[in-house]
Image (cartoon, rainbow, N blue to C red; front, side, top):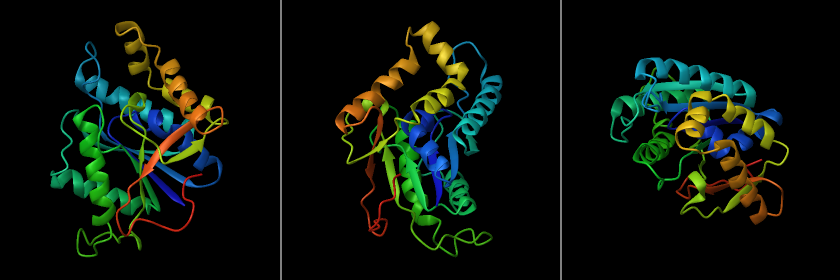
Length: 234
């Protein structure tokens, strides 16, 4: 299968579903990691244009660890809007470019508006990409790609309906997150947060829920016709 993760900022996919994406890649699936926002406002010291470049390279480095291709829509932080036709068209083209068989994105209810807007965009383009006369220069997929919502930060207000055992992938996931040095170092020095320990703890908790050492939790977008009678998560 072709797996497309659509996250808001560089590092969001690594945090929410990096282990699952690594597992897909290990199984031989083609994995794409798309971030909509470029992360240019994610630091109080590094200036936005410099940070934009840093975070794009960090995203590419992290994707390489996971075994994925990194794609950026390059929208400024706090700019993603589900009603923005330009962003929707860009994501529609990405769904077609990747020939996505499955999309993973943010939960519609999350701790910041950027994440929520990207969730709505992902739901929208899972439909829009199949419309032949929309952006007809590129062919659409033959199916409506199923959509799964990944865990929220710290699992707040998120009850998984499916779990993926990432026990064998947890170190690779943490290595991928470590590639986002501008964020990991900033949170440690500015907020006194050991973010790698934070993520490990969250995945251990999901593992306790699902009877394994480490896991990631998901909910499926249950809108017709995105439901399929087969196991899609690894």
